[in-house]
Length: 372
Image (cartoon, rainbow, N blue to C red):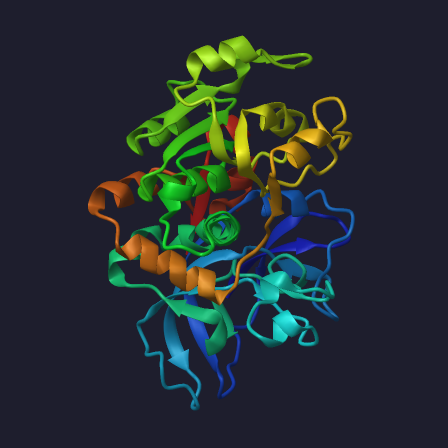
């Protein structure tokens, strides 16, 4: 079978031929249909420490995938041949409380592995094998968008974690809806995670404002407006010393927010907007700063968080429950929203065009998908 693998020594991607996996009684063989490329995949290409599976010099990359079951181990009853499935990504350490209770995304030892990222082969291959416990069946209604399920789980996890925290601390657990707690939301960053988080929030009837550096006539702006949200071009109010607040306020429909989600990983931008958070509000951090400067004092006022009773929530990865919640949420949406969702996929290329797919520049793409 053909695979796309990253060599840990020369840091280059290559198309390799490997045997089709043999499955055990508790495993399933899946024929890949589509795999998504995300920023984590791109960052691996320049990583100084690529963690390959034991005894292997190459890492098959890719952790966003959808495929069709073609063979099932003898001890598996729930799945059937022909099912469309999406795999989860992280495999727990097996030692901490959370990994022993199906919450590997909350692992406390850091000794987890992730398919296509660290220590385990990923899904950019014609076939992959997986244990049944790590697969989720996708209803036919969602098949064309199924490659977006994994990145959507990142937003689902963080949004509902924030919602449960706020519901408990502000309203004593009363039956408040998401849009009663998070009426106005600012999403910083219009990459796939930012757009998918905006998509989930908009479909929950919240007021979403999304900020990115792309032009207001571009596809990102179009997607946000189709959701009923507002898109703002950061370049129109960004300055060398931060942002021009008077320009931002004149452009923003909602300049006071119950929630800010940072999907940019740029602390210099994120912390410029803290003063627009209402008392008792929340900041969710989804982006990683990488090699960006992490000195926040220029924009960050520590006292604001104290005096406003604010919460900062970091969130990464997702577990099987979040995959199931994502599918359930998407199934309840009408065709209008699902058509918007599909616009986030800007490029579909055959896997043999992987070099072209990885070479696409940031301003040319949102979600790039390889077909198998």
